[in-house]
Image (cartoon, rainbow, N blue to C red):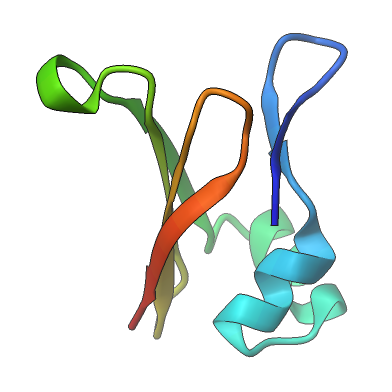
Length: 80
């Protein structure tokens, strides 16, 4: 999984990869997004974590979090 900088300056995670990590179908993830049931947050690190970014995705009944380096490479992840 990679964190990719989009053409509008936004960060993008492939929804197919994200859906697999959340154990939902892509169409269900997209439907939940349209209904406002997906909370997505991006936090940048500072201090010892400078240069790292954490993406956190929360659905009504599960979630996923991943830490990415400056190049967008996934370093660690957690699902609940």
